[in-house]
Picture: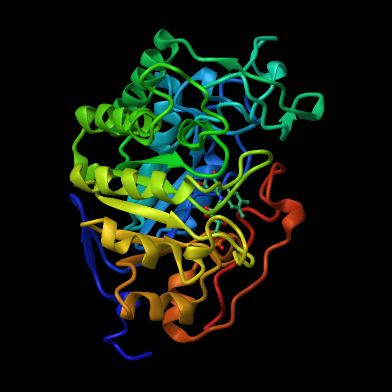
Length: 366
Ligand SMILES: Cc1cc2nc3c(=O)[nH]c(=O)nc-3n(C[C@H](O)[C@H](O)[C@H](O)COP(=O)(O)O)c2cc1C
């Protein structure tokens, strides 16, 4: 591999220096098998194994109890969870890595069985009808309860509190989960957000929540330690792109640009976008939004080493992230560097279970 390969060039994102441009994207693996949702030692080992990534993004992590939408996914809303995460960040740092925590709220993609019988909170009482992983097996998400202004204010505060705990836990930064059908896309989408107050209606109003969350997170740390992941073209259940999606995200991305975050990560959908309201993204979500964003862009979604390099060389993005390839290739950076073949993960072990399919993928022999 030529030493001037752009994938292996260092980059500074916000306040953080990365030795290469290969990022491990967030992946829920549901190994936090304790009622307090405190990350376990096995998770520290899993992330330590992947420390050669330019940057690791943790699995989606709850910033509050209200954010919960699945079992065995870790939290970061109390001191014990922060202590559990400290084990993870110490392990990654000891092996020379860097790690951000991803903070995500499931919104309507949840179930009363995960909330002592209470309905999940969302911008409006519109159901996603998504399967939710509950103690009683998969159940369909119901029509949620519309958030009051107090609920919104408290939720913004929860993201800020989790950001404070992230610093305490030794993370290098925080990423706001703004993808698929969870709380943030629900606020952005006019078919899910039917609010008549200043969080609904116009594009500016629908974008207000995510911008206020980001400002609260920045207030707890600094803009250079905060990232955002968006997926304008990716739907979930009944929440799908509409004719308003592109204008909404164009506005949002331009507003986020003013915040001078560490980066904006854009998840490009799999499949053919022809004939959909987001057909204009077909040539690449990162390339589409580049003119709207003055800052560091991280491209994600179905990338290979070749397509990732081409994207960086074309300057459509500044760094690239890999999700599924990181499951079976803890040493993805070395495999790319030395042109080694990639192992393929078993989807049966993506979620839950112990070390099988989690920490037992070996580095490639060299
Ligand atoms: C098992 C699994 C769990 C995932 N969990 C999350 C998550 O918690 N947060 C998130 O933002 N994306 C999650 N994703 C999406 C990935 O981060 C990534 O955006 C997506 O897989 C596309 O990248 P890839 O084609 O390189 O896998 C998950 C993906 C997989 C395969």
